[in-house]
Image (cartoon, rainbow, N blue to C red; front, side, top):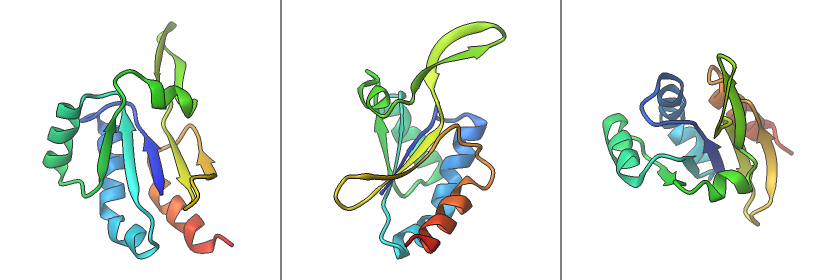
Amino acid sequence: MILYFYPKDNTPGCTQESCDFKDAFEAFANLNVHIIGVSKDSVTSHEKFAKKYDLPFALGADTDHNVLEAYGVWVEKKLYGRAYMGIERATFLIDEQGKIEKIWRRVKVKNHVTEILDYLKNAP
């Protein structure tokens, strides 16, 4: 399973990342890999986002940050010298037994999905 964490629905990077996962959905399915995206947005926001971009996978709404904190992606960030709490873009590959097999932290959206597929195709 791919569990990817992203900061916010309908923002440029998050939309691109989600659409990249959508475009590669069949390739992941052929590898028997499910995809779940998680952010702190509400269920309603996720429903609109998924419908707008025709996302074929589940989006988890973690409005209380429990899952985000458990995976260590709810972190202090800085923008223009101001500190705030937010989501570090990250992706976790979780095996059939629920064990984390690989983590990609501080993800850059460009080529990320391709990088994951390459890893899966070449994994031992």
